[in-house]
Length: 595
Image: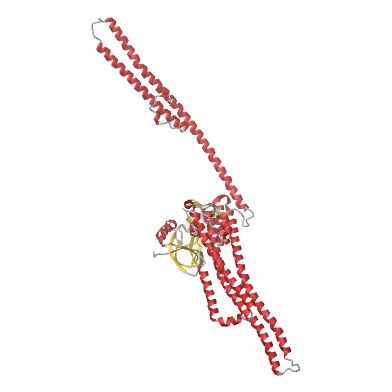
Protein backbone atom coordinates (compact mmCIF):
# COMPACT_ATOMS: atom_id res chain seq x y z
CA UNK A 1 0.00 0.00 0.00
CA UNK A 2 1.29 3.47 -0.85
CA UNK A 3 2.29 5.79 1.95
CA UNK A 4 -0.72 7.66 3.22
CA UNK A 5 -0.69 10.59 5.65
CA UNK A 6 -4.40 11.01 6.41
CA UNK A 7 -6.94 8.81 8.21
CA UNK A 8 -10.70 9.34 7.91
CA UNK A 9 -12.56 8.97 11.21
CA UNK A 10 -16.32 8.54 11.33
CA UNK A 11 -16.92 6.73 14.63
CA UNK A 12 -14.70 6.09 17.63
CA UNK A 13 -11.70 7.52 15.77
CA UNK A 14 -13.31 10.94 16.24
CA UNK A 15 -13.09 10.80 20.03
CA UNK A 16 -10.48 8.08 20.54
CA UNK A 17 -7.99 8.03 17.65
CA UNK A 18 -5.30 6.35 19.70
CA UNK A 19 -2.57 8.71 18.49
CA UNK A 20 -1.71 12.40 18.49
CA UNK A 21 -2.61 13.74 15.03
CA UNK A 22 -0.62 16.57 13.52
CA UNK A 23 -3.84 18.09 12.14
CA UNK A 24 -7.56 17.48 12.64
CA UNK A 25 -9.93 18.85 10.00
CA UNK A 26 -13.65 18.37 9.37
CA UNK A 27 -14.08 16.25 6.26
CA UNK A 28 -16.66 14.60 4.00
CA UNK A 29 -16.53 11.27 2.19
CA UNK A 30 -18.86 10.72 -0.78
CA UNK A 31 -20.39 7.36 -1.64
CA UNK A 32 -20.44 5.95 1.89
CA UNK A 33 -22.85 6.14 4.81
CA UNK A 34 -22.16 5.86 8.55
CA UNK A 35 -24.37 3.11 9.99
CA UNK A 36 -24.46 0.49 12.74
CA UNK A 37 -23.77 -2.39 10.37
CA UNK A 38 -21.02 -4.38 12.14
CA UNK A 39 -21.67 -6.98 14.84
CA UNK A 40 -19.00 -6.52 17.49
CA UNK A 41 -17.86 -9.66 19.30
CA UNK A 42 -14.85 -8.21 21.13
CA UNK A 43 -14.72 -4.48 21.81
CA UNK A 44 -18.44 -3.79 22.39
CA UNK A 45 -19.94 -7.26 22.60
CA UNK A 46 -19.24 -10.98 22.87
CA UNK A 47 -19.90 -14.00 20.68
CA UNK A 48 -22.83 -14.90 22.94
CA UNK A 49 -24.25 -11.35 23.04
CA UNK A 50 -22.81 -9.40 20.08
CA UNK A 51 -23.03 -5.63 19.95
CA UNK A 52 -23.26 -3.15 17.08
CA UNK A 53 -20.60 -0.64 16.03
CA UNK A 54 -20.35 1.83 13.17
CA UNK A 55 -19.01 1.01 9.75
CA UNK A 56 -18.64 2.74 6.39
CA UNK A 57 -21.37 1.14 4.31
CA UNK A 58 -21.02 1.79 0.54
CA UNK A 59 -24.18 3.51 -0.75
CA UNK A 60 -24.79 5.44 -3.94
CA UNK A 61 -25.39 9.13 -3.34
CA UNK A 62 -24.54 8.95 0.36
CA UNK A 63 -22.30 11.43 2.16
CA UNK A 64 -20.49 10.70 5.44
CA UNK A 65 -19.27 13.56 7.61
CA UNK A 66 -16.31 12.99 9.92
CA UNK A 67 -12.80 14.19 10.63
CA UNK A 68 -9.55 13.76 8.73
CA UNK A 69 -6.55 13.07 10.97
CA UNK A 70 -3.08 13.73 9.60
CA UNK A 71 -0.41 11.34 10.89
CA UNK A 72 2.89 12.78 12.02
CA UNK A 73 5.73 11.46 9.81
CA UNK A 74 7.68 10.09 12.75
CA UNK A 75 4.63 8.10 13.96
CA UNK A 76 3.51 6.80 10.56
CA UNK A 77 4.48 3.13 10.87
CA UNK A 78 3.44 2.82 14.50
CA UNK A 79 0.05 4.45 13.93
CA UNK A 80 -0.75 2.21 10.96
CA UNK A 81 0.23 -0.89 12.93
CA UNK A 82 -1.96 0.17 15.87
CA UNK A 83 -4.91 0.96 13.59
CA UNK A 84 -4.69 -2.41 11.88
CA UNK A 85 -4.47 -4.23 15.19
CA UNK A 86 -7.52 -2.30 16.34
CA UNK A 87 -9.74 -2.35 13.25
CA UNK A 88 -8.79 -5.57 11.46
CA UNK A 89 -9.40 -7.99 14.32
CA UNK A 90 -11.81 -10.20 12.36
CA UNK A 91 -11.24 -8.81 8.84
CA UNK A 92 -14.75 -7.39 8.82
CA UNK A 93 -13.25 -4.12 7.57
CA UNK A 94 -11.05 -3.63 4.57
CA UNK A 95 -8.49 -0.89 4.17
CA UNK A 96 -9.22 1.58 1.38
CA UNK A 97 -7.59 4.81 0.23
CA UNK A 98 -10.41 7.19 -0.67
CA UNK A 99 -10.62 10.86 -1.74
CA UNK A 100 -11.81 13.02 1.15
CA UNK A 101 -12.91 16.68 0.90
CA UNK A 102 -11.63 18.80 3.78
CA UNK A 103 -13.51 21.76 5.20
CA UNK A 104 -10.85 24.23 4.07
CA UNK A 105 -11.25 23.21 0.41
CA UNK A 106 -8.43 20.70 0.11
CA UNK A 107 -8.94 17.21 -1.27
CA UNK A 108 -6.66 14.52 0.16
CA UNK A 109 -6.29 10.77 -0.08
CA UNK A 110 -7.17 9.25 3.28
CA UNK A 111 -7.07 5.78 4.75
CA UNK A 112 -10.55 4.52 5.67
CA UNK A 113 -11.89 1.24 7.00
CA UNK A 114 -14.82 0.12 4.86
CA UNK A 115 -17.32 -2.57 5.82
CA UNK A 116 -17.22 -5.88 3.93
CA UNK A 117 -20.78 -6.70 2.99
CA UNK A 118 -19.90 -10.35 2.36
CA UNK A 119 -18.53 -10.81 5.88
CA UNK A 120 -20.56 -12.82 8.39
CA UNK A 121 -20.50 -9.88 10.86
CA UNK A 122 -22.28 -7.53 8.44
CA UNK A 123 -25.62 -6.44 9.90
CA UNK A 124 -26.78 -3.68 7.59
CA UNK A 125 -30.44 -2.81 7.18
CA UNK A 126 -31.55 -3.60 10.75
CA UNK A 127 -34.58 -1.62 11.96
CA UNK A 128 -33.88 1.17 14.43
CA UNK A 129 -35.70 -0.58 17.29
CA UNK A 130 -33.64 -3.74 16.73
CA UNK A 131 -30.44 -1.70 16.75
CA UNK A 132 -31.48 -0.04 20.02
CA UNK A 133 -32.26 -3.41 21.62
CA UNK A 134 -28.87 -4.86 20.67
CA UNK A 135 -26.91 -1.79 21.77
CA UNK A 136 -28.73 -1.55 25.09
CA UNK A 137 -27.79 -5.06 26.20
CA UNK A 138 -24.33 -5.61 24.70
CA UNK A 139 -21.09 -5.24 26.65
CA UNK A 140 -17.57 -5.97 25.41
CA UNK A 141 -13.92 -5.68 26.29
CA UNK A 142 -13.92 -1.89 25.96
CA UNK A 143 -17.13 -1.31 27.85
CA UNK A 144 -20.87 -1.10 27.20
CA UNK A 145 -22.11 -0.81 23.64
CA UNK A 146 -24.33 2.09 24.70
CA UNK A 147 -21.27 4.04 25.81
CA UNK A 148 -19.86 3.78 22.30
CA UNK A 149 -23.10 5.17 20.86
CA UNK A 150 -23.38 8.01 23.38
CA UNK A 151 -19.75 9.06 22.98
CA UNK A 152 -19.97 9.16 19.20
CA UNK A 153 -23.25 11.09 19.14
CA UNK A 154 -22.04 13.58 21.76
CA UNK A 155 -18.76 14.29 20.02
CA UNK A 156 -20.35 14.70 16.61
CA UNK A 157 -22.63 17.33 18.14
CA UNK A 158 -19.72 19.03 19.90
CA UNK A 159 -17.70 19.44 16.70
CA UNK A 160 -20.69 20.85 14.84
CA UNK A 161 -21.73 17.74 12.88
CA UNK A 162 -24.77 16.33 14.71
CA UNK A 163 -26.17 13.06 13.39
CA UNK A 164 -29.97 12.91 13.73
CA UNK A 165 -30.01 9.12 13.42
CA UNK A 166 -27.48 8.65 16.25
CA UNK A 167 -29.32 11.15 18.45
CA UNK A 168 -32.63 9.35 17.93
CA UNK A 169 -30.96 5.98 18.53
CA UNK A 170 -29.41 7.29 21.76
CA UNK A 171 -32.84 8.36 23.02
CA UNK A 172 -34.26 4.96 22.12
CA UNK A 173 -31.49 3.13 23.99
CA UNK A 174 -31.95 5.29 27.09
CA UNK A 175 -35.70 4.71 27.04
CA UNK A 176 -35.34 0.98 26.38
CA UNK A 177 -32.99 -0.03 29.15
CA UNK A 178 -32.20 2.74 31.61
CA UNK A 179 -31.35 0.26 34.39
CA UNK A 180 -28.62 -1.30 32.29
CA UNK A 181 -26.75 1.92 31.69
CA UNK A 182 -23.78 2.33 33.98
CA UNK A 183 -22.62 5.51 35.59
CA UNK A 184 -20.09 5.87 32.80
CA UNK A 185 -22.95 6.00 30.29
CA UNK A 186 -24.57 8.80 32.26
CA UNK A 187 -21.40 10.81 32.59
CA UNK A 188 -19.64 10.43 29.29
CA UNK A 189 -16.38 12.26 29.11
CA UNK A 190 -15.77 14.08 25.84
CA UNK A 191 -12.37 12.57 25.70
CA UNK A 192 -11.73 9.66 28.00
CA UNK A 193 -7.92 9.41 28.47
CA UNK A 194 -4.64 10.58 27.18
CA UNK A 195 -5.14 8.59 24.02
CA UNK A 196 -8.08 10.70 23.03
CA UNK A 197 -7.97 13.61 20.62
CA UNK A 198 -4.99 15.72 21.50
CA UNK A 199 -4.14 13.62 24.57
CA UNK A 200 -7.04 15.22 26.49
CA UNK A 201 -5.50 18.53 27.31
CA UNK A 202 -2.96 19.29 24.55
CA UNK A 203 -4.54 22.35 22.86
CA UNK A 204 -4.41 22.93 19.12
CA UNK A 205 -4.87 26.66 18.77
CA UNK A 206 -3.63 28.62 15.80
CA UNK A 207 -2.31 32.14 16.06
CA UNK A 208 -4.18 34.75 13.93
CA UNK A 209 -1.18 35.16 11.63
CA UNK A 210 -3.28 35.14 8.47
CA UNK A 211 -5.64 37.77 9.83
CA UNK A 212 -2.76 40.03 10.90
CA UNK A 213 -1.15 39.70 7.47
CA UNK A 214 -4.41 40.60 5.68
CA UNK A 215 -4.95 43.58 7.98
CA UNK A 216 -1.43 44.84 7.32
CA UNK A 217 -1.96 44.47 3.58
CA UNK A 218 -5.20 46.50 3.70
CA UNK A 219 -3.61 49.16 5.87
CA UNK A 220 -0.59 49.30 3.56
CA UNK A 221 -2.82 49.77 0.52
CA UNK A 222 -4.67 52.60 2.27
CA UNK A 223 -1.42 54.35 3.20
CA UNK A 224 -0.05 53.88 -0.33
CA UNK A 225 -3.21 55.36 -1.82
CA UNK A 226 -3.04 58.28 0.57
CA UNK A 227 0.60 58.89 -0.34
CA UNK A 228 -0.05 59.01 -4.06
CA UNK A 229 -3.20 61.16 -3.67
CA UNK A 230 -1.71 63.38 -0.98
CA UNK A 231 -2.21 66.61 -2.89
CA UNK A 232 -5.89 66.06 -3.55
CA UNK A 233 -6.60 64.69 -0.11
CA UNK A 234 -4.95 67.68 1.52
CA UNK A 235 -7.22 70.08 -0.30
CA UNK A 236 -10.22 67.98 0.72
CA UNK A 237 -9.02 67.95 4.31
CA UNK A 238 -8.61 71.74 4.32
CA UNK A 239 -12.30 72.19 3.51
CA UNK A 240 -13.10 71.76 7.21
CA UNK A 241 -10.07 70.88 9.29
CA UNK A 242 -11.88 70.48 12.58
CA UNK A 243 -14.51 68.05 11.36
CA UNK A 244 -12.18 66.16 9.04
CA UNK A 245 -9.54 66.01 11.76
CA UNK A 246 -12.11 64.45 14.09
CA UNK A 247 -12.97 61.89 11.40
CA UNK A 248 -9.31 60.95 10.92
CA UNK A 249 -8.88 60.63 14.70
CA UNK A 250 -11.84 58.24 14.97
CA UNK A 251 -10.47 56.30 11.98
CA UNK A 252 -7.11 55.89 13.73
CA UNK A 253 -8.86 54.71 16.91
CA UNK A 254 -10.83 52.14 14.90
CA UNK A 255 -7.64 50.76 13.33
CA UNK A 256 -5.95 50.57 16.73
CA UNK A 257 -9.01 48.82 18.23
CA UNK A 258 -8.87 46.15 15.51
CA UNK A 259 -5.20 45.45 16.10
CA UNK A 260 -5.81 45.49 19.85
CA UNK A 261 -8.41 42.72 19.45
CA UNK A 262 -5.99 40.65 17.39
CA UNK A 263 -3.38 41.20 20.09
CA UNK A 264 -5.85 39.88 22.66
CA UNK A 265 -6.33 36.74 20.57
CA UNK A 266 -2.58 36.22 20.27
CA UNK A 267 -2.10 36.62 24.01
CA UNK A 268 -5.02 34.29 24.77
CA UNK A 269 -3.67 31.54 22.51
CA UNK A 270 -0.21 31.82 24.07
CA UNK A 271 -1.67 31.72 27.57
CA UNK A 272 -3.73 28.58 26.88
CA UNK A 273 -0.70 26.79 25.46
CA UNK A 274 1.36 27.74 28.50
CA UNK A 275 -1.47 26.77 30.84
CA UNK A 276 -1.90 23.31 29.30
CA UNK A 277 1.86 22.72 29.30
CA UNK A 278 2.06 23.80 32.94
CA UNK A 279 -0.75 21.44 33.91
CA UNK A 280 1.00 18.53 32.17
CA UNK A 281 4.33 19.34 33.85
CA UNK A 282 2.95 20.07 37.32
CA UNK A 283 4.23 16.82 38.85
CA UNK A 284 7.75 17.45 37.61
CA UNK A 285 8.25 21.19 37.79
CA UNK A 286 5.63 22.39 40.25
CA UNK A 287 3.10 25.09 39.60
CA UNK A 288 3.71 28.66 38.50
CA UNK A 289 1.35 31.58 38.26
CA UNK A 290 0.61 33.33 35.00
CA UNK A 291 -1.88 36.16 34.82
CA UNK A 292 -4.67 35.27 32.43
CA UNK A 293 -5.72 37.69 29.69
CA UNK A 294 -8.99 39.53 30.10
CA UNK A 295 -10.66 37.36 27.47
CA UNK A 296 -9.97 34.15 29.43
CA UNK A 297 -10.40 35.40 32.97
CA UNK A 298 -13.44 33.15 33.74
CA UNK A 299 -11.65 30.14 32.25
CA UNK A 300 -8.59 30.74 34.41
CA UNK A 301 -10.75 31.17 37.52
CA UNK A 302 -12.47 27.80 37.04
CA UNK A 303 -9.55 25.75 35.77
CA UNK A 304 -6.98 27.12 38.16
CA UNK A 305 -6.87 23.90 40.18
CA UNK A 306 -8.35 21.41 37.74
CA UNK A 307 -8.25 22.02 34.00
CA UNK A 308 -7.10 19.43 31.48
CA UNK A 309 -4.59 17.99 33.89
CA UNK A 310 -7.10 17.54 36.73
CA UNK A 311 -10.76 16.74 37.13
CA UNK A 312 -13.36 17.10 34.43
CA UNK A 313 -15.86 19.94 34.50
CA UNK A 314 -19.59 19.73 34.02
CA UNK A 315 -21.37 20.68 30.84
CA UNK A 316 -23.06 23.61 32.57
CA UNK A 317 -19.69 24.99 33.73
CA UNK A 318 -18.25 24.63 30.23
CA UNK A 319 -21.29 26.37 28.76
CA UNK A 320 -20.94 29.19 31.28
CA UNK A 321 -17.27 29.68 30.37
CA UNK A 322 -17.98 29.70 26.65
CA UNK A 323 -20.83 32.16 27.14
CA UNK A 324 -18.57 34.46 29.15
CA UNK A 325 -15.82 34.31 26.50
CA UNK A 326 -18.37 34.99 23.76
CA UNK A 327 -19.70 37.96 25.72
CA UNK A 328 -16.23 39.43 26.09
CA UNK A 329 -15.55 38.92 22.39
CA UNK A 330 -18.81 40.67 21.56
CA UNK A 331 -17.87 43.54 23.86
CA UNK A 332 -14.63 44.05 21.94
CA UNK A 333 -16.51 43.83 18.64
CA UNK A 334 -18.96 46.45 19.85
CA UNK A 335 -16.11 48.95 20.18
CA UNK A 336 -15.03 48.66 16.54
CA UNK A 337 -18.62 48.54 15.35
CA UNK A 338 -19.37 51.72 17.23
CA UNK A 339 -16.30 53.45 15.76
CA UNK A 340 -17.25 52.35 12.24
CA UNK A 341 -20.78 53.65 12.75
CA UNK A 342 -19.37 56.84 14.26
CA UNK A 343 -17.34 57.41 11.09
CA UNK A 344 -20.52 57.08 9.03
CA UNK A 345 -22.32 59.47 11.38
CA UNK A 346 -19.53 62.05 11.17
CA UNK A 347 -19.58 61.81 7.39
CA UNK A 348 -23.33 62.38 7.35
CA UNK A 349 -22.95 65.16 9.91
CA UNK A 350 -20.47 66.94 7.65
CA UNK A 351 -22.79 66.43 4.70
CA UNK A 352 -25.75 67.98 6.48
CA UNK A 353 -23.57 70.72 7.93
CA UNK A 354 -22.32 71.60 4.48
CA UNK A 355 -25.83 71.63 3.08
CA UNK A 356 -26.97 73.70 6.04
CA UNK A 357 -24.37 76.35 5.18
CA UNK A 358 -24.93 76.11 1.42
CA UNK A 359 -28.66 76.79 1.35
CA UNK A 360 -28.51 80.11 3.23
CA UNK A 361 -25.61 81.13 0.98
CA UNK A 362 -27.77 80.43 -2.09
CA UNK A 363 -30.56 82.57 -0.67
CA UNK A 364 -28.12 85.38 0.13
CA UNK A 365 -26.63 85.17 -3.37
CA UNK A 366 -30.02 85.43 -5.01
CA UNK A 367 -30.89 88.47 -2.92
CA UNK A 368 -27.55 90.06 -3.74
CA UNK A 369 -28.33 89.89 -7.45
CA UNK A 370 -31.08 92.41 -7.03
CA UNK A 371 -29.56 95.82 -8.09
CA UNK A 372 -29.63 98.70 -5.68
CA UNK A 373 -29.25 102.37 -6.30
CA UNK A 374 -25.75 103.27 -7.25
CA UNK A 375 -24.57 99.67 -7.89
CA UNK A 376 -22.87 98.95 -11.12
CA UNK A 377 -22.76 95.70 -13.02
CA UNK A 378 -19.28 95.04 -11.63
CA UNK A 379 -20.61 95.28 -8.10
CA UNK A 380 -23.37 92.79 -8.87
CA UNK A 381 -20.85 90.41 -10.36
CA UNK A 382 -18.70 90.76 -7.24
CA UNK A 383 -21.69 89.90 -5.03
CA UNK A 384 -22.39 86.83 -7.18
CA UNK A 385 -18.81 85.59 -6.81
CA UNK A 386 -18.91 86.07 -3.06
CA UNK A 387 -22.16 84.12 -2.76
CA UNK A 388 -20.90 81.30 -4.97
CA UNK A 389 -17.75 81.05 -2.90
CA UNK A 390 -19.78 80.50 0.27
CA UNK A 391 -21.94 77.92 -1.45
CA UNK A 392 -18.96 76.01 -2.81
CA UNK A 393 -17.30 76.08 0.63
CA UNK A 394 -20.34 74.43 2.15
CA UNK A 395 -20.45 71.84 -0.61
CA UNK A 396 -16.73 71.12 -0.07
CA UNK A 397 -17.37 70.50 3.60
CA UNK A 398 -20.27 68.18 2.78
CA UNK A 399 -18.40 66.13 0.19
CA UNK A 400 -15.05 65.99 2.04
CA UNK A 401 -16.52 64.83 5.35
CA UNK A 402 -18.78 62.34 3.61
CA UNK A 403 -15.86 60.95 1.59
CA UNK A 404 -13.51 60.65 4.55
CA UNK A 405 -16.17 59.23 6.88
CA UNK A 406 -17.44 56.57 4.47
CA UNK A 407 -13.94 55.60 3.34
CA UNK A 408 -12.77 55.30 6.95
CA UNK A 409 -15.84 53.23 7.85
CA UNK A 410 -15.14 50.93 4.90
CA UNK A 411 -11.53 50.33 5.98
CA UNK A 412 -12.40 49.82 9.66
CA UNK A 413 -15.22 47.45 8.70
CA UNK A 414 -12.87 45.38 6.54
CA UNK A 415 -10.33 45.15 9.35
CA UNK A 416 -13.12 44.17 11.73
CA UNK A 417 -14.13 41.40 9.32
CA UNK A 418 -10.67 39.87 9.50
CA UNK A 419 -10.67 40.19 13.28
CA UNK A 420 -14.08 38.50 13.45
CA UNK A 421 -12.79 35.53 11.44
CA UNK A 422 -9.92 35.12 13.89
CA UNK A 423 -12.21 35.42 16.90
CA UNK A 424 -14.66 32.86 15.52
CA UNK A 425 -11.87 30.38 14.84
CA UNK A 426 -10.47 30.93 18.34
CA UNK A 427 -13.91 30.33 19.84
CA UNK A 428 -14.33 27.06 17.90
CA UNK A 429 -10.90 25.85 18.91
CA UNK A 430 -11.58 26.78 22.54
CA UNK A 431 -14.85 24.85 22.44
CA UNK A 432 -13.17 21.78 20.95
CA UNK A 433 -10.37 21.94 23.51
CA UNK A 434 -12.75 22.26 26.45
CA UNK A 435 -14.78 19.31 25.20
CA UNK A 436 -11.74 17.20 26.08
CA UNK A 437 -12.40 17.58 29.82
CA UNK A 438 -16.16 18.19 29.86
CA UNK A 439 -18.50 15.49 31.07
CA UNK A 440 -22.18 15.10 30.26
CA UNK A 441 -24.10 14.77 33.50
CA UNK A 442 -27.63 13.64 34.21
CA UNK A 443 -28.76 17.23 34.51
CA UNK A 444 -31.36 18.38 32.04
CA UNK A 445 -30.50 20.51 29.10
CA UNK A 446 -31.59 23.73 30.81
CA UNK A 447 -29.17 23.09 33.66
CA UNK A 448 -31.87 23.88 36.26
CA UNK A 449 -33.17 20.40 36.96
CA UNK A 450 -32.42 16.72 36.64
CA UNK A 451 -33.52 14.36 33.92
CA UNK A 452 -36.06 12.25 35.79
CA UNK A 453 -35.69 9.24 33.51
CA UNK A 454 -31.93 9.31 33.86
CA UNK A 455 -32.18 9.70 37.64
CA UNK A 456 -34.64 6.81 37.88
CA UNK A 457 -32.34 4.60 35.83
CA UNK A 458 -29.39 5.57 37.99
CA UNK A 459 -31.29 4.77 41.20
CA UNK A 460 -32.44 1.41 39.79
CA UNK A 461 -28.90 0.59 38.90
CA UNK A 462 -27.66 1.53 42.39
CA UNK A 463 -30.39 -0.60 43.98
CA UNK A 464 -29.35 -3.57 41.84
CA UNK A 465 -25.72 -3.08 42.78
CA UNK A 466 -26.61 -2.90 46.48
CA UNK A 467 -28.60 -6.16 46.20
CA UNK A 468 -25.71 -7.89 44.48
CA UNK A 469 -23.27 -6.55 47.08
CA UNK A 470 -25.47 -7.79 49.93
CA UNK A 471 -25.77 -11.23 48.34
CA UNK A 472 -22.01 -11.36 47.85
CA UNK A 473 -21.33 -10.56 51.52
CA UNK A 474 -23.89 -13.15 52.69
CA UNK A 475 -22.32 -15.81 50.49
CA UNK A 476 -18.85 -14.87 51.71
CA UNK A 477 -19.98 -15.12 55.38
CA UNK A 478 -21.47 -18.57 54.74
CA UNK A 479 -18.25 -19.75 53.12
CA UNK A 480 -16.26 -18.34 56.03
CA UNK A 481 -18.44 -20.23 58.58
CA UNK A 482 -18.08 -23.46 56.60
CA UNK A 483 -14.32 -23.04 56.46
CA UNK A 484 -14.24 -22.44 60.23
CA UNK A 485 -16.17 -25.69 60.89
CA UNK A 486 -13.83 -27.65 58.68
CA UNK A 487 -10.84 -26.12 60.48
CA UNK A 488 -12.32 -27.12 63.86
CA UNK A 489 -12.75 -30.69 62.63
CA UNK A 490 -9.14 -30.76 61.43
CA UNK A 491 -7.99 -29.44 64.83
CA UNK A 492 -9.86 -32.26 66.65
CA UNK A 493 -8.34 -34.89 64.36
CA UNK A 494 -4.88 -33.42 64.83
CA UNK A 495 -5.32 -33.33 68.61
CA UNK A 496 -6.28 -37.04 68.62
CA UNK A 497 -3.24 -37.82 66.48
CA UNK A 498 -0.99 -35.89 68.87
CA UNK A 499 -2.44 -37.77 71.88
CA UNK A 500 -1.76 -41.08 70.17
CA UNK A 501 1.80 -40.03 69.41
CA UNK A 502 2.35 -39.01 73.04
CA UNK A 503 1.07 -42.38 74.29
CA UNK A 504 3.26 -44.22 71.82
CA UNK A 505 6.30 -42.21 72.91
CA UNK A 506 5.54 -42.96 76.57
CA UNK A 507 5.27 -46.66 75.80
CA UNK A 508 8.57 -46.60 73.90
CA UNK A 509 10.21 -44.83 76.83
CA UNK A 510 8.88 -47.30 79.43
CA UNK A 511 9.85 -50.39 77.40
CA UNK A 512 13.67 -50.06 77.81
CA UNK A 513 13.25 -49.47 81.58
CA UNK A 514 11.24 -52.67 81.95
CA UNK A 515 13.74 -54.70 79.94
CA UNK A 516 16.64 -53.33 82.01
CA UNK A 517 14.83 -54.22 85.26
CA UNK A 518 14.09 -57.77 84.11
CA UNK A 519 17.71 -58.24 83.05
CA UNK A 520 18.93 -56.99 86.43
CA UNK A 521 16.63 -59.45 88.26
CA UNK A 522 17.83 -62.30 86.10
CA UNK A 523 21.46 -61.50 86.82
CA UNK A 524 20.70 -61.22 90.54
CA UNK A 525 19.13 -64.69 90.55
CA UNK A 526 22.09 -66.06 88.64
CA UNK A 527 24.48 -64.56 91.13
CA UNK A 528 22.61 -66.09 94.05
CA UNK A 529 22.88 -69.66 92.62
CA UNK A 530 26.40 -69.56 91.16
CA UNK A 531 29.70 -69.51 92.93
CA UNK A 532 31.50 -66.16 92.86
CA UNK A 533 34.40 -67.49 90.90
CA UNK A 534 33.57 -66.07 87.37
CA UNK A 535 34.59 -62.46 86.45
CA UNK A 536 31.54 -60.42 85.46
CA UNK A 537 33.35 -57.14 84.58
CA UNK A 538 32.82 -57.51 80.85
CA UNK A 539 29.19 -58.33 81.39
CA UNK A 540 28.70 -55.18 83.44
CA UNK A 541 30.41 -53.05 80.77
CA UNK A 542 28.11 -54.53 78.14
CA UNK A 543 25.13 -53.78 80.30
CA UNK A 544 26.31 -50.18 80.77
CA UNK A 545 26.69 -49.74 77.01
CA UNK A 546 23.24 -51.24 76.47
CA UNK A 547 21.73 -48.88 79.03
CA UNK A 548 23.47 -45.85 77.45
CA UNK A 549 22.26 -46.80 73.99
CA UNK A 550 18.72 -47.26 75.24
CA UNK A 551 18.82 -43.85 76.97
CA UNK A 552 20.17 -42.14 73.87
CA UNK A 553 17.55 -43.80 71.68
CA UNK A 554 14.84 -42.71 74.06
CA UNK A 555 16.07 -39.09 74.02
CA UNK A 556 16.22 -39.08 70.22
CA UNK A 557 12.70 -40.48 70.02
CA UNK A 558 11.44 -37.78 72.41
CA UNK A 559 13.19 -35.02 70.38
CA UNK A 560 11.67 -36.33 67.14
CA UNK A 561 8.26 -36.43 68.80
CA UNK A 562 8.63 -32.84 69.97
CA UNK A 563 9.58 -31.71 66.44
CA UNK A 564 6.57 -33.53 65.00
CA UNK A 565 4.33 -31.86 67.58
CA UNK A 566 5.70 -28.41 66.64
CA UNK A 567 5.08 -29.12 62.94
CA UNK A 568 1.51 -30.16 63.71
CA UNK A 569 1.05 -27.03 65.82
CA UNK A 570 2.16 -24.85 62.92
CA UNK A 571 -0.25 -26.63 60.56
CA UNK A 572 -3.13 -26.23 63.01
CA UNK A 573 -2.51 -22.49 63.50
CA UNK A 574 -2.20 -21.93 59.78
CA UNK A 575 -5.46 -23.79 59.06
CA UNK A 576 -7.49 -22.30 61.88
CA UNK A 577 -6.16 -18.77 62.36
CA UNK A 578 -4.19 -18.02 59.23
CA UNK A 579 -1.11 -17.39 61.44
CA UNK A 580 1.80 -19.61 60.26
CA UNK A 581 4.15 -20.80 63.01
CA UNK A 582 7.68 -19.45 62.73
CA UNK A 583 10.24 -21.96 61.49
CA UNK A 584 12.91 -20.58 63.83
CA UNK A 585 10.96 -22.02 66.79
CA UNK A 586 11.27 -25.63 65.63
CA UNK A 587 14.70 -26.04 67.19
CA UNK A 588 13.68 -24.80 70.67
CA UNK A 589 12.82 -26.95 73.64
CA UNK A 590 9.13 -26.45 74.46
CA UNK A 591 9.83 -27.10 78.10
CA UNK A 592 11.93 -23.94 78.25
CA UNK A 593 9.20 -21.64 76.99
CA UNK A 594 9.71 -18.67 74.73
CA UNK A 595 12.72 -17.16 76.50
